[in-house]
Image 1 (cartoon, one colour):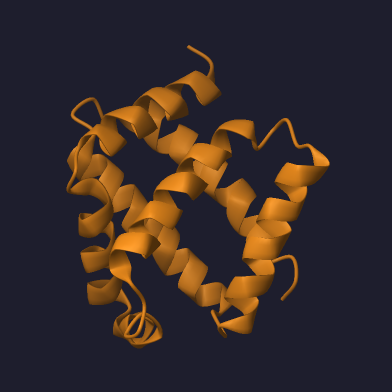
Image 2: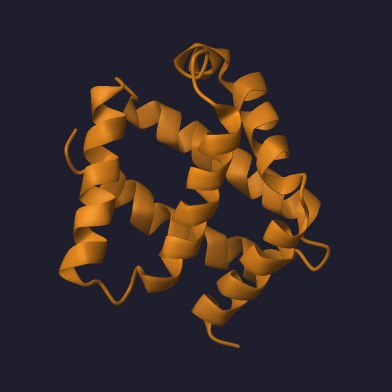
Length: 130
């Protein structure tokens, strides 16, 4: 199965679990307590929905249109404006992978690699403005 299909299937299994996104944020704030202060005034339901949207936007990552590029560049600019540091993205990625491993019942090395590839691409774009 192509790596993109492996990623999409895993993402869909994770998203089917209503606890996937909340578990991710719990893990992230546990690993990087500094980040929790960034979210102290944030509507977490809205934030969780934005993360869901971003994970679905990854479906088109390899087929960028101007609109998709603008979406990711705008997101990058917002994160930079919030003073999110490059190191925070590394924690974000490791926490996401941990949650995938816990919420995808089919998790294996191939799935881990597929997520790694997608997340590394997006983090490279997200940190482009740094």
